[in-house]
Amino acid sequence: EPEACQAQGGPGEADPRGVGEDGLQGQAEVLNRVDHVIAVMSGKGGVGKSSLAAMLAVALRRSGRRVGLLDADITGPSIPRMFGLHEQPGMTPFGIMPPETRSGIKVMSINLLLPHEDEAVIWRGPLIGGAIKQFWSEVYWGDLDTLVIDLPPGTADAPLTVMQSIPLSGIVMVTSPQDLAGMVVRKAAKMASQLQVPILGLVENMSYITCPTCGARIDVFGPSRAEHTAQLLGIPLLGRIPLDPQLAACCDAGQIESYDSAALAPIVDEVIARMP
Image (cartoon, rainbow, N blue to C red; front, side, top):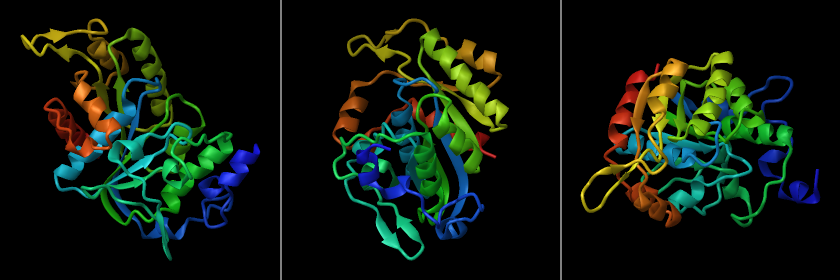
């Protein structure tokens, strides 16, 4: 591996306490009590998957649930910035202690382990998979009602590791109005089906914009294809989220917990109702 990778160390290195070929569990994994694990997946980059994962975690926390958020996008992490988190994880006798956001969401991301948030993580697939496994087995999540996992784009090592190594309750698929995005999302959905992971439903992000003058809905990226995509996959359409400049401003400022979207509430209700 490149020297930069070796120097960063952390979860990318082999750890005898982690899940290895002998199948041993980390001590934290034995002590953790996580009722539901929801992965947010798109297959396609740029559809707002990470922001939806963050908003879902915030909404679940507002409902009184104990929530964790695992950033499995090892090479393109963005979750800590959205919450304004810069605190490095602590260490306990049980494992890594994830820092908490202002509202009490436990967060784990590779960016919290880097000396600077804009450092590149230049790792090959096995290291990425090892890091994700350790974020599950070596992080002391404690008692959680829901752990939300932000998956990277694609259907390669990282999503495969999550689906095979972590007991998922279900997956929320994210798309945008373009049929090109729908095509890639269908690939990701077929991956989940082949691995027998239940899909809770589909969310169309950046679906429209509301005119600030007349209140009309404007289809910036063309007419919605969400219902068509959901029908092809045989899954429910959970809802459509508009394009909102305020969301981008809150994410850039690290204040996503202050953002509130009326369109998100019914989606969260559907996700909760459909969880096993």
